[in-house]
Length: 93
Image: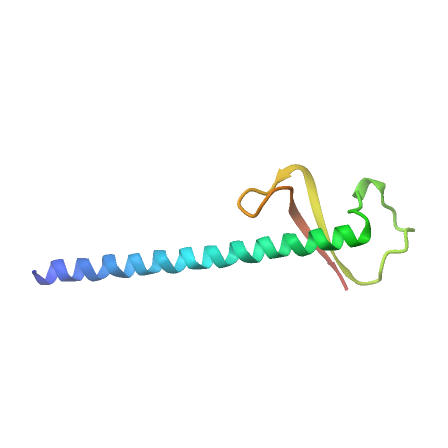
């Protein structure tokens, strides 16, 4: 094998390794998303359902601090399960 062929082979092996690492991160990311939506589902069941922003107002006794997750009609999850997808997050400090 020539020097150029060995160099090309090393580059291809390096690219294969990078792709494998990206796939591992994707799998880990997917596991985190599934867990996140599972926790949101538990919270929603505990609270008696999610609130619709259109039905809310500032006089509803909101906490002074919190994290708010927003969904949008027609935006559904795909790889992480079924149901609505979180499209925006707000943090109130």
